[in-house]
Length: 237
Image 1 (cartoon, rainbow, N blue to C red):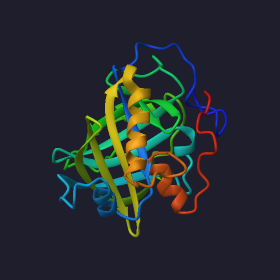
Image 2 (cartoon, rainbow, N blue to C red; image 1 turned 135 degrees about the vertical axis):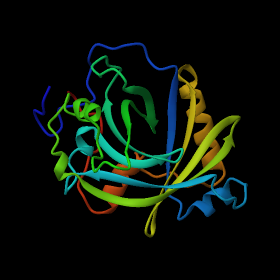
Image 3 (cartoon, rainbow, N blue to C red; image 1 turned 90 degrees about the horizontal axis):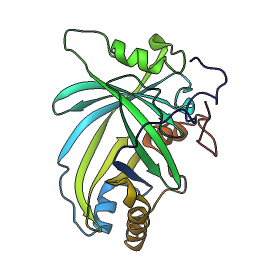
């Protein structure tokens, strides 16, 4: 299935499979820096439990992010990896074997996000493995040699507990801009209740939630002045 229009490829109703049992609840935070957020949450200024570089990739100017595809490299447990993600409007079976899918939520928007990770071998110049290429091009053509690196940027992470839930707070520092968010994984059936409770808690502590709730990649490109996405990020296939 190839690209038909700039906003017509992903996030569409296709035959669905059983949903993942968990959903990722996420809050985009617009405080000035992570220390300010940690202090608002009453936990002082602890060091992050890990800090690794992350690099985002897209065309120049970015186009794939608006169409539901995301490309990144980062370090996971000491191993450099690349990751390709595709976002869908609802659960879908139109993904290859070996691709992991989960529900993501920012604000009132729920998206079914599927991801393929591959290790980056030290003796290889290739960033993207053939499974990732097959995965992405299942939905649209990608100019792989034309992907531009945005980064690397340091990505610091802290472990928290909010309203009885294990949470992670991370900060991607892109110069003076801090792309911060809180993430909590909960059973899908508890998603709405947990989202409302944690949102209320964050606001009550004075944490500044971004007016536009969306992922760090989209926020980065907007901050760079690129016209990406739209007021409604639910694109149809």
